[in-house]
Length: 209
Length: 328
Image (cartoon, rainbow over all chains, first blue to last red):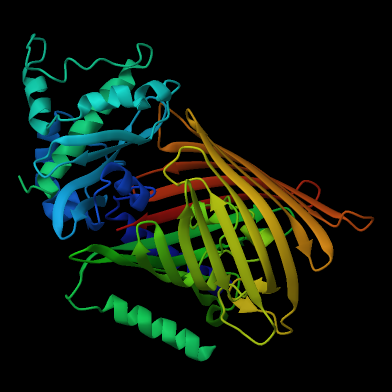
Protein backbone atom coordinates (compact mmCIF):
# COMPACT_ATOMS: atom_id res chain seq x y z
CA UNK A 1 0.00 0.00 0.00
CA UNK A 2 2.74 2.45 1.04
CA UNK A 3 4.73 1.43 -2.04
CA UNK A 4 1.76 2.19 -4.27
CA UNK A 5 1.21 5.61 -2.73
CA UNK A 6 4.93 6.37 -3.13
CA UNK A 7 4.92 5.29 -6.78
CA UNK A 8 1.79 7.36 -7.36
CA UNK A 9 3.40 10.43 -5.86
CA UNK A 10 6.50 9.97 -8.03
CA UNK A 11 4.40 9.60 -11.19
CA UNK A 12 2.18 12.53 -10.26
CA UNK A 13 5.15 14.78 -9.38
CA UNK A 14 6.96 13.87 -12.59
CA UNK A 15 3.90 14.55 -14.68
CA UNK A 16 3.30 17.83 -12.88
CA UNK A 17 6.86 19.03 -13.49
CA UNK A 18 6.73 18.02 -17.16
CA UNK A 19 3.34 19.58 -17.70
CA UNK A 20 3.76 22.81 -15.77
CA UNK A 21 7.12 23.55 -17.33
CA UNK A 22 5.51 24.94 -20.48
CA UNK A 23 2.15 25.93 -19.21
CA UNK A 24 0.07 28.15 -21.46
CA UNK A 25 -2.89 27.75 -23.81
CA UNK A 26 -6.63 27.19 -23.63
CA UNK A 27 -9.70 26.88 -25.71
CA UNK A 28 -10.37 29.95 -27.81
CA UNK A 29 -13.54 31.41 -29.19
CA UNK A 30 -15.40 29.20 -31.66
CA UNK A 31 -18.89 29.64 -33.08
CA UNK A 32 -21.51 27.89 -30.95
CA UNK A 33 -23.53 26.89 -33.97
CA UNK A 34 -21.38 27.47 -37.08
CA UNK A 35 -23.87 26.03 -39.60
CA UNK A 36 -26.68 28.31 -38.50
CA UNK A 37 -24.46 31.35 -37.80
CA UNK A 38 -22.67 31.28 -41.15
CA UNK A 39 -25.86 30.67 -43.13
CA UNK A 40 -27.46 33.62 -41.36
CA UNK A 41 -24.56 36.00 -42.12
CA UNK A 42 -23.91 34.68 -45.64
CA UNK A 43 -27.26 33.33 -46.94
CA UNK A 44 -25.67 32.67 -50.35
CA UNK A 45 -22.93 30.43 -48.93
CA UNK A 46 -22.78 26.74 -49.83
CA UNK A 47 -20.23 25.67 -47.22
CA UNK A 48 -17.28 26.71 -45.08
CA UNK A 49 -13.81 25.47 -44.24
CA UNK A 50 -12.47 25.52 -40.70
CA UNK A 51 -8.82 26.41 -40.09
CA UNK A 52 -7.22 26.22 -36.66
CA UNK A 53 -3.94 27.96 -35.88
CA UNK A 54 -2.17 29.82 -33.07
CA UNK A 55 0.30 32.66 -32.50
CA UNK A 56 2.79 30.04 -31.29
CA UNK A 57 2.49 28.12 -34.56
CA UNK A 58 2.70 31.20 -36.79
CA UNK A 59 5.58 33.06 -35.20
CA UNK A 60 5.63 32.68 -31.42
CA UNK A 61 6.87 35.49 -29.18
CA UNK A 62 8.01 37.61 -32.12
CA UNK A 63 4.52 37.58 -33.61
CA UNK A 64 2.98 38.17 -30.17
CA UNK A 65 5.11 41.32 -29.81
CA UNK A 66 4.02 42.52 -33.27
CA UNK A 67 0.39 41.97 -32.28
CA UNK A 68 0.88 43.88 -29.02
CA UNK A 69 2.48 46.75 -30.93
CA UNK A 70 -0.37 46.90 -33.45
CA UNK A 71 -2.95 46.59 -30.68
CA UNK A 72 -1.26 49.19 -28.47
CA UNK A 73 -1.83 46.97 -25.46
CA UNK A 74 -0.40 43.91 -23.70
CA UNK A 75 -1.89 40.50 -24.44
CA UNK A 76 -3.57 38.81 -21.49
CA UNK A 77 -1.32 35.91 -20.35
CA UNK A 78 -4.31 33.65 -19.62
CA UNK A 79 -6.99 34.49 -22.15
CA UNK A 80 -4.70 35.59 -25.03
CA UNK A 81 -1.72 33.25 -24.56
CA UNK A 82 0.41 32.34 -27.60
CA UNK A 83 -0.82 28.79 -27.96
CA UNK A 84 -4.52 29.49 -27.73
CA UNK A 85 -6.01 28.00 -30.90
CA UNK A 86 -7.79 30.47 -33.19
CA UNK A 87 -10.54 29.08 -35.37
CA UNK A 88 -11.15 30.78 -38.72
CA UNK A 89 -14.14 29.95 -40.89
CA UNK A 90 -13.55 30.51 -44.61
CA UNK A 91 -16.98 30.95 -46.18
CA UNK A 92 -17.51 29.46 -49.63
CA UNK A 93 -19.95 29.87 -52.49
CA UNK A 94 -19.25 26.87 -54.66
CA UNK A 95 -15.47 26.70 -54.62
CA UNK A 96 -14.98 30.48 -54.33
CA UNK A 97 -14.28 32.39 -51.10
CA UNK A 98 -16.89 35.04 -50.22
CA UNK A 99 -15.75 35.94 -46.70
CA UNK A 100 -14.37 34.89 -43.34
CA UNK A 101 -15.69 34.59 -39.80
CA UNK A 102 -13.53 34.74 -36.68
CA UNK A 103 -14.16 35.27 -32.98
CA UNK A 104 -12.04 36.44 -30.04
CA UNK A 105 -12.42 36.33 -26.29
CA UNK A 106 -12.19 39.76 -24.69
CA UNK A 107 -12.33 40.65 -21.02
CA UNK A 108 -15.33 42.79 -20.15
CA UNK A 109 -16.43 44.62 -16.99
CA UNK A 110 -18.59 41.74 -15.75
CA UNK A 111 -16.95 38.73 -17.43
CA UNK A 112 -15.80 37.49 -20.79
CA UNK A 113 -17.14 38.78 -24.10
CA UNK A 114 -17.01 36.83 -27.34
CA UNK A 115 -16.65 39.20 -30.27
CA UNK A 116 -17.46 37.70 -33.67
CA UNK A 117 -16.60 39.41 -36.94
CA UNK A 118 -17.62 38.47 -40.45
CA UNK A 119 -15.31 40.14 -42.96
CA UNK A 120 -15.14 40.26 -46.74
CA UNK A 121 -12.19 39.09 -48.81
CA UNK A 122 -10.51 42.52 -48.41
CA UNK A 123 -10.84 42.62 -44.61
CA UNK A 124 -13.85 44.97 -44.29
CA UNK A 125 -16.36 44.18 -41.56
CA UNK A 126 -19.61 42.79 -42.95
CA UNK A 127 -21.11 42.05 -39.57
CA UNK A 128 -20.09 42.34 -35.93
CA UNK A 129 -21.94 40.71 -33.03
CA UNK A 130 -21.38 39.50 -29.49
CA UNK A 131 -21.73 35.74 -29.14
CA UNK A 132 -21.41 36.28 -25.39
CA UNK A 133 -21.83 39.52 -23.49
CA UNK A 134 -22.16 39.77 -19.72
CA UNK A 135 -23.32 43.24 -18.85
CA UNK A 136 -26.45 44.83 -17.37
CA UNK A 137 -26.54 46.82 -20.60
CA UNK A 138 -26.01 43.78 -22.86
CA UNK A 139 -29.21 44.55 -24.80
CA UNK A 140 -27.94 48.04 -25.68
CA UNK A 141 -24.58 46.69 -26.82
CA UNK A 142 -26.16 43.83 -28.77
CA UNK A 143 -28.67 46.07 -30.52
CA UNK A 144 -28.10 45.67 -34.25
CA UNK A 145 -28.64 49.40 -34.79
CA UNK A 146 -25.53 49.97 -32.71
CA UNK A 147 -23.39 47.03 -33.88
CA UNK A 148 -24.11 47.79 -37.56
CA UNK A 149 -22.16 51.07 -37.20
CA UNK A 150 -19.01 48.93 -37.50
CA UNK A 151 -20.05 47.51 -40.87
CA UNK A 152 -17.67 48.61 -43.61
CA UNK A 153 -14.82 49.44 -41.23
CA UNK A 154 -11.38 47.84 -41.61
CA UNK A 155 -8.21 47.60 -39.54
CA UNK A 156 -6.85 50.77 -41.19
CA UNK A 157 -9.73 52.73 -39.62
CA UNK A 158 -8.63 51.59 -36.16
CA UNK A 159 -4.99 52.55 -36.85
CA UNK A 160 -6.17 55.95 -38.09
CA UNK A 161 -8.27 56.37 -34.92
CA UNK A 162 -5.18 55.60 -32.77
CA UNK A 163 -3.10 58.10 -34.73
CA UNK A 164 -5.77 60.80 -34.28
CA UNK A 165 -5.94 60.40 -30.50
CA UNK A 166 -6.94 63.70 -28.81
CA UNK A 167 -7.32 65.35 -32.20
CA UNK A 168 -10.50 66.04 -34.09
CA UNK A 169 -10.60 64.43 -37.49
CA UNK A 170 -13.60 64.18 -39.79
CA UNK A 171 -12.12 61.00 -41.31
CA UNK A 172 -11.97 59.24 -37.93
CA UNK A 173 -14.87 56.79 -38.35
CA UNK A 174 -14.32 55.11 -34.99
CA UNK A 175 -14.61 58.41 -33.10
CA UNK A 176 -18.10 58.84 -34.55
CA UNK A 177 -19.29 55.69 -32.79
CA UNK A 178 -20.41 56.44 -29.23
CA UNK A 179 -20.88 54.05 -26.32
CA UNK A 180 -24.47 52.77 -26.10
CA UNK A 181 -24.17 52.98 -22.31
CA UNK A 182 -22.83 55.84 -20.17
CA UNK A 183 -22.72 53.67 -17.05
CA UNK A 184 -20.76 50.83 -18.62
CA UNK A 185 -18.55 52.83 -20.93
CA UNK A 186 -15.57 50.60 -20.13
CA UNK A 187 -17.32 47.77 -21.98
CA UNK A 188 -17.35 50.03 -25.04
CA UNK A 189 -13.57 50.45 -24.70
CA UNK A 190 -13.21 46.66 -24.26
CA UNK A 191 -15.35 46.14 -27.36
CA UNK A 192 -13.15 48.42 -29.48
CA UNK A 193 -10.09 46.53 -28.26
CA UNK A 194 -11.72 43.18 -29.06
CA UNK A 195 -12.74 44.22 -32.58
CA UNK A 196 -9.27 45.60 -33.26
CA UNK A 197 -7.62 42.45 -31.90
CA UNK A 198 -9.90 40.32 -34.07
CA UNK A 199 -9.00 42.35 -37.19
CA UNK A 200 -5.27 42.14 -36.39
CA UNK A 201 -5.48 38.34 -36.09
CA UNK A 202 -7.39 38.15 -39.39
CA UNK A 203 -4.71 40.36 -40.95
CA UNK A 204 -1.92 38.09 -39.69
CA UNK A 205 -3.51 34.69 -40.19
CA UNK A 206 -5.80 35.13 -43.20
CA UNK A 207 -4.13 37.86 -45.23
CA UNK A 208 -0.57 37.06 -44.03
CA UNK A 209 0.32 40.74 -43.55
CA UNK B 1 -20.24 -6.78 -31.20
CA UNK B 2 -16.48 -7.30 -31.33
CA UNK B 3 -16.74 -6.92 -35.10
CA UNK B 4 -18.52 -3.58 -34.63
CA UNK B 5 -15.83 -2.35 -32.20
CA UNK B 6 -13.15 -3.44 -34.61
CA UNK B 7 -14.97 -1.73 -37.48
CA UNK B 8 -15.21 1.57 -35.54
CA UNK B 9 -11.52 1.37 -34.54
CA UNK B 10 -10.43 0.66 -38.12
CA UNK B 11 -12.50 3.61 -39.39
CA UNK B 12 -11.00 5.95 -36.72
CA UNK B 13 -7.43 4.82 -37.43
CA UNK B 14 -8.04 5.18 -41.16
CA UNK B 15 -9.35 8.73 -40.68
CA UNK B 16 -6.49 9.78 -38.40
CA UNK B 17 -4.00 8.58 -40.99
CA UNK B 18 -5.92 10.03 -43.96
CA UNK B 19 -3.50 11.24 -46.64
CA UNK B 20 -3.54 14.67 -48.19
CA UNK B 21 -6.48 14.26 -50.56
CA UNK B 22 -8.47 16.21 -48.00
CA UNK B 23 -7.39 19.35 -46.12
CA UNK B 24 -7.80 19.26 -42.37
CA UNK B 25 -7.67 21.36 -39.22
CA UNK B 26 -6.62 19.48 -36.14
CA UNK B 27 -5.77 19.93 -32.49
CA UNK B 28 -4.21 17.56 -30.01
CA UNK B 29 -4.92 18.47 -26.41
CA UNK B 30 -3.01 16.97 -23.49
CA UNK B 31 -4.74 16.41 -20.20
CA UNK B 32 -3.62 15.75 -16.65
CA UNK B 33 -6.07 15.33 -13.83
CA UNK B 34 -4.81 15.07 -10.24
CA UNK B 35 -7.34 14.85 -7.47
CA UNK B 36 -7.84 13.77 -3.93
CA UNK B 37 -9.94 14.53 -0.91
CA UNK B 38 -11.39 13.45 2.36
CA UNK B 39 -14.83 12.05 3.04
CA UNK B 40 -16.45 11.56 6.46
CA UNK B 41 -17.76 8.18 5.34
CA UNK B 42 -14.78 6.81 3.42
CA UNK B 43 -11.68 8.66 4.65
CA UNK B 44 -9.17 9.43 1.89
CA UNK B 45 -10.86 9.45 -1.54
CA UNK B 46 -8.98 9.44 -4.82
CA UNK B 47 -11.95 9.60 -7.19
CA UNK B 48 -15.39 11.06 -7.59
CA UNK B 49 -18.19 10.29 -9.99
CA UNK B 50 -16.76 10.16 -13.51
CA UNK B 51 -13.32 11.36 -12.48
CA UNK B 52 -10.09 9.68 -11.42
CA UNK B 53 -6.41 10.60 -11.35
CA UNK B 54 -5.54 10.35 -15.00
CA UNK B 55 -3.43 11.38 -17.90
CA UNK B 56 -5.03 11.64 -21.30
CA UNK B 57 -5.61 13.50 -24.47
CA UNK B 58 -8.10 14.68 -27.02
CA UNK B 59 -7.54 14.59 -30.76
CA UNK B 60 -9.93 16.78 -32.73
CA UNK B 61 -9.85 17.06 -36.47
CA UNK B 62 -12.03 18.61 -39.17
CA UNK B 63 -11.76 17.43 -42.74
CA UNK B 64 -12.60 19.63 -45.67
CA UNK B 65 -12.42 19.61 -49.45
CA UNK B 66 -13.05 22.29 -52.09
CA UNK B 67 -16.68 22.50 -51.01
CA UNK B 68 -15.92 22.98 -47.32
CA UNK B 69 -15.93 20.90 -44.14
CA UNK B 70 -17.53 17.47 -44.44
CA UNK B 71 -16.25 15.37 -41.56
CA UNK B 72 -15.30 15.87 -37.90
CA UNK B 73 -13.44 13.43 -35.68
CA UNK B 74 -13.07 13.56 -31.91
CA UNK B 75 -11.12 11.03 -29.88
CA UNK B 76 -10.79 11.61 -26.13
CA UNK B 77 -9.24 9.02 -23.84
CA UNK B 78 -7.78 8.82 -20.34
CA UNK B 79 -5.35 6.44 -18.68
CA UNK B 80 -6.55 6.38 -15.09
CA UNK B 81 -4.71 5.41 -11.94
CA UNK B 82 -6.07 4.55 -8.50
CA UNK B 83 -3.30 4.84 -5.88
CA UNK B 84 -5.34 2.90 -3.32
CA UNK B 85 -5.36 -0.23 -5.49
CA UNK B 86 -2.65 -2.82 -6.13
CA UNK B 87 -0.25 -1.31 -8.69
CA UNK B 88 -1.04 -3.86 -11.40
CA UNK B 89 -4.79 -3.37 -10.98
CA UNK B 90 -4.63 0.36 -10.51
CA UNK B 91 -4.51 1.27 -14.20
CA UNK B 92 -7.37 1.48 -16.63
CA UNK B 93 -8.09 2.96 -20.03
CA UNK B 94 -11.24 5.05 -20.40
CA UNK B 95 -12.73 6.10 -23.69
CA UNK B 96 -14.78 9.27 -23.47
CA UNK B 97 -15.38 10.67 -26.95
CA UNK B 98 -14.68 8.46 -29.95
CA UNK B 99 -16.86 9.63 -32.79
CA UNK B 100 -16.92 10.76 -36.37
CA UNK B 101 -19.56 13.14 -37.65
CA UNK B 102 -20.49 13.46 -41.28
CA UNK B 103 -22.01 16.74 -42.42
CA UNK B 104 -25.02 16.05 -44.63
CA UNK B 105 -25.70 19.75 -45.30
CA UNK B 106 -26.13 23.01 -43.36
CA UNK B 107 -27.53 21.97 -39.97
CA UNK B 108 -27.72 18.22 -40.66
CA UNK B 109 -25.15 15.79 -39.28
CA UNK B 110 -24.81 12.05 -38.83
CA UNK B 111 -22.62 10.81 -35.97
CA UNK B 112 -21.26 7.35 -35.25
CA UNK B 113 -19.13 6.13 -32.34
CA UNK B 114 -19.05 6.85 -28.60
CA UNK B 115 -20.81 10.11 -27.63
CA UNK B 116 -23.32 11.74 -25.25
CA UNK B 117 -26.91 10.48 -25.41
CA UNK B 118 -29.35 13.19 -26.56
CA UNK B 119 -30.82 13.86 -23.15
CA UNK B 120 -30.77 16.77 -20.71
CA UNK B 121 -27.99 19.25 -20.01
CA UNK B 122 -25.10 16.87 -20.75
CA UNK B 123 -24.93 17.15 -24.58
CA UNK B 124 -24.69 20.96 -24.25
CA UNK B 125 -22.32 21.15 -21.27
CA UNK B 126 -18.62 20.44 -21.10
CA UNK B 127 -18.24 18.49 -17.85
CA UNK B 128 -15.24 16.44 -18.96
CA UNK B 129 -12.85 18.12 -16.52
CA UNK B 130 -15.20 19.59 -13.92
CA UNK B 131 -16.04 18.34 -10.45
CA UNK B 132 -19.67 19.42 -10.65
CA UNK B 133 -21.57 17.15 -13.02
CA UNK B 134 -25.07 17.03 -14.53
CA UNK B 135 -27.82 14.51 -13.79
CA UNK B 136 -26.60 12.19 -16.58
CA UNK B 137 -25.16 9.58 -14.22
CA UNK B 138 -28.37 9.47 -12.18
CA UNK B 139 -30.63 9.48 -15.20
CA UNK B 140 -28.81 7.11 -17.52
CA UNK B 141 -25.93 5.61 -15.54
CA UNK B 142 -23.18 6.89 -17.82
CA UNK B 143 -22.31 9.99 -19.84
CA UNK B 144 -21.44 8.48 -23.22
CA UNK B 145 -22.47 5.41 -25.16
CA UNK B 146 -21.79 3.66 -28.47
CA UNK B 147 -24.21 4.17 -31.32
CA UNK B 148 -25.48 6.41 -34.10
CA UNK B 149 -26.90 9.91 -33.78
CA UNK B 150 -28.54 12.43 -36.07
CA UNK B 151 -28.71 16.22 -35.68
CA UNK B 152 -31.07 18.45 -37.61
CA UNK B 153 -33.45 21.37 -37.32
CA UNK B 154 -37.16 21.99 -37.59
CA UNK B 155 -37.64 25.67 -38.34
CA UNK B 156 -36.32 27.63 -35.36
CA UNK B 157 -35.54 24.54 -33.25
CA UNK B 158 -32.55 22.18 -33.29
CA UNK B 159 -33.01 18.53 -32.50
CA UNK B 160 -30.83 15.47 -32.07
CA UNK B 161 -31.75 11.80 -31.84
CA UNK B 162 -29.53 8.87 -30.85
CA UNK B 163 -29.79 5.12 -31.04
CA UNK B 164 -27.20 3.64 -28.68
CA UNK B 165 -26.11 0.43 -27.05
CA UNK B 166 -27.23 1.06 -23.44
CA UNK B 167 -23.93 0.01 -21.86
CA UNK B 168 -21.77 3.14 -21.61
CA UNK B 169 -18.10 2.60 -22.31
CA UNK B 170 -18.13 -1.13 -22.85
CA UNK B 171 -19.71 -2.55 -25.98
CA UNK B 172 -21.85 -5.50 -25.00
CA UNK B 173 -24.92 -7.18 -26.52
CA UNK B 174 -27.14 -10.07 -25.63
CA UNK B 175 -29.31 -8.71 -22.82
CA UNK B 176 -31.80 -6.77 -24.89
CA UNK B 177 -29.90 -3.62 -24.01
CA UNK B 178 -30.50 -0.45 -26.03
CA UNK B 179 -30.90 3.29 -25.52
CA UNK B 180 -33.06 5.71 -27.53
CA UNK B 181 -32.81 9.42 -26.76
CA UNK B 182 -34.10 12.64 -28.29
CA UNK B 183 -33.66 16.31 -27.46
CA UNK B 184 -35.23 19.35 -29.08
CA UNK B 185 -34.27 22.87 -28.09
CA UNK B 186 -33.61 26.40 -29.25
CA UNK B 187 -30.42 27.09 -31.28
CA UNK B 188 -27.02 26.91 -29.57
CA UNK B 189 -26.21 30.44 -30.72
CA UNK B 190 -28.78 31.92 -28.32
CA UNK B 191 -27.86 33.26 -24.87
CA UNK B 192 -30.61 31.44 -23.04
CA UNK B 193 -30.77 27.75 -23.95
CA UNK B 194 -33.66 25.42 -23.22
CA UNK B 195 -34.67 21.96 -24.33
CA UNK B 196 -37.08 19.08 -23.92
CA UNK B 197 -35.70 15.53 -23.86
CA UNK B 198 -37.07 12.01 -24.04
CA UNK B 199 -35.32 8.74 -23.29
CA UNK B 200 -36.26 5.08 -23.40
CA UNK B 201 -33.96 2.11 -23.00
CA UNK B 202 -32.83 -1.09 -21.40
CA UNK B 203 -29.64 -0.06 -19.60
CA UNK B 204 -27.05 -2.48 -18.29
CA UNK B 205 -26.16 -1.44 -14.77
CA UNK B 206 -22.56 -0.41 -14.61
CA UNK B 207 -20.42 -0.74 -11.49
CA UNK B 208 -17.81 1.60 -12.91
CA UNK B 209 -18.19 3.28 -16.23
CA UNK B 210 -15.68 0.90 -17.80
CA UNK B 211 -16.46 -2.35 -16.06
CA UNK B 212 -19.85 -4.09 -16.22
CA UNK B 213 -20.99 -6.22 -13.35
CA UNK B 214 -20.79 -9.94 -13.93
CA UNK B 215 -24.49 -10.59 -13.66
CA UNK B 216 -25.32 -7.84 -16.18
CA UNK B 217 -28.34 -6.53 -14.33
CA UNK B 218 -30.48 -4.38 -16.56
CA UNK B 219 -32.98 -1.61 -15.88
CA UNK B 220 -35.79 -0.48 -18.17
CA UNK B 221 -35.58 3.31 -18.10
CA UNK B 222 -38.13 5.86 -19.31
CA UNK B 223 -37.59 9.58 -18.94
CA UNK B 224 -38.86 12.98 -19.91
CA UNK B 225 -36.67 15.95 -19.09
CA UNK B 226 -36.40 19.73 -19.29
CA UNK B 227 -33.16 21.68 -19.20
CA UNK B 228 -32.09 25.28 -19.45
CA UNK B 229 -29.06 27.58 -19.20
CA UNK B 230 -29.43 31.29 -18.52
CA UNK B 231 -26.52 33.77 -18.44
CA UNK B 232 -27.22 36.91 -16.41
CA UNK B 233 -24.46 39.48 -15.91
CA UNK B 234 -21.59 37.61 -14.23
CA UNK B 235 -23.82 34.63 -13.40
CA UNK B 236 -24.65 31.48 -15.32
CA UNK B 237 -27.70 29.54 -14.13
CA UNK B 238 -28.23 25.93 -15.15
CA UNK B 239 -31.23 23.78 -14.39
CA UNK B 240 -32.42 20.31 -15.21
CA UNK B 241 -35.57 18.39 -14.32
CA UNK B 242 -36.26 14.73 -15.13
CA UNK B 243 -39.18 12.42 -14.42
CA UNK B 244 -39.67 8.78 -15.37
CA UNK B 245 -39.48 5.18 -14.27
CA UNK B 246 -36.67 2.75 -13.47
CA UNK B 247 -38.46 -0.54 -14.17
CA UNK B 248 -41.73 0.12 -12.29
CA UNK B 249 -40.37 2.62 -9.78
CA UNK B 250 -41.12 6.31 -10.30
CA UNK B 251 -38.07 8.55 -10.22
CA UNK B 252 -37.84 12.33 -10.10
CA UNK B 253 -34.63 14.33 -10.26
CA UNK B 254 -33.69 18.00 -10.32
CA UNK B 255 -30.50 19.99 -10.59
CA UNK B 256 -29.86 23.67 -10.07
CA UNK B 257 -26.48 25.31 -10.51
CA UNK B 258 -25.22 28.86 -10.38
CA UNK B 259 -21.74 29.98 -11.47
CA UNK B 260 -20.32 33.40 -10.72
CA UNK B 261 -17.31 34.89 -12.48
CA UNK B 262 -15.63 37.50 -10.29
CA UNK B 263 -15.55 40.65 -12.46
CA UNK B 264 -12.36 42.01 -10.85
CA UNK B 265 -10.49 38.74 -11.40
CA UNK B 266 -12.10 36.70 -14.13
CA UNK B 267 -9.89 33.65 -13.66
CA UNK B 268 -11.81 33.05 -10.42
CA UNK B 269 -15.20 31.31 -10.57
CA UNK B 270 -17.48 30.26 -7.71
CA UNK B 271 -20.14 27.63 -8.25
CA UNK B 272 -22.93 26.13 -6.20
CA UNK B 273 -25.06 23.16 -7.15
CA UNK B 274 -27.97 21.32 -5.62
CA UNK B 275 -29.17 17.93 -6.82
CA UNK B 276 -32.30 16.14 -5.63
CA UNK B 277 -33.20 12.58 -6.49
CA UNK B 278 -36.34 10.73 -5.47
CA UNK B 279 -36.70 6.97 -5.98
CA UNK B 280 -40.31 5.83 -5.58
CA UNK B 281 -43.32 7.88 -4.51
CA UNK B 282 -44.80 5.39 -2.03
CA UNK B 283 -43.80 4.09 1.39
CA UNK B 284 -40.43 2.83 0.17
CA UNK B 285 -39.37 6.10 -1.33
CA UNK B 286 -35.72 7.02 -1.04
CA UNK B 287 -34.74 10.66 -1.15
CA UNK B 288 -31.27 12.00 -1.77
CA UNK B 289 -30.04 15.59 -1.75
CA UNK B 290 -26.56 16.71 -2.64
CA UNK B 291 -25.25 20.22 -2.15
CA UNK B 292 -21.92 21.18 -3.70
CA UNK B 293 -19.77 24.32 -3.60
CA UNK B 294 -16.80 24.69 -5.88
CA UNK B 295 -14.20 27.41 -6.31
CA UNK B 296 -12.09 27.23 -9.44
CA UNK B 297 -9.10 29.36 -10.25
CA UNK B 298 -7.35 29.44 -13.58
CA UNK B 299 -3.64 29.64 -12.78
CA UNK B 300 -2.63 29.82 -16.42
CA UNK B 301 -4.52 29.34 -19.62
CA UNK B 302 -3.90 25.59 -19.35
CA UNK B 303 -4.09 24.97 -15.62
CA UNK B 304 -7.11 25.20 -13.37
CA UNK B 305 -7.24 24.32 -9.69
CA UNK B 306 -10.51 23.55 -7.96
CA UNK B 307 -11.60 23.13 -4.36
CA UNK B 308 -14.94 21.51 -3.70
CA UNK B 309 -17.13 20.85 -0.70
CA UNK B 310 -20.01 18.41 -1.12
CA UNK B 311 -22.61 17.48 1.43
CA UNK B 312 -25.07 14.59 1.15
CA UNK B 313 -26.47 15.89 4.42
CA UNK B 314 -26.88 13.04 6.92
CA UNK B 315 -24.91 10.56 4.78
CA UNK B 316 -21.55 12.12 4.01
CA UNK B 317 -19.55 15.34 3.77
CA UNK B 318 -16.58 15.54 1.48
CA UNK B 319 -13.83 18.01 0.58
CA UNK B 320 -11.97 17.61 -2.67
CA UNK B 321 -9.07 19.26 -4.49
CA UNK B 322 -8.32 19.07 -8.18
CA UNK B 323 -5.35 20.08 -10.30
CA UNK B 324 -6.45 20.09 -13.93
CA UNK B 325 -4.26 20.64 -16.95
CA UNK B 326 -5.78 20.83 -20.43
CA UNK B 327 -3.96 22.38 -23.35
CA UNK B 328 -2.12 22.03 -26.60
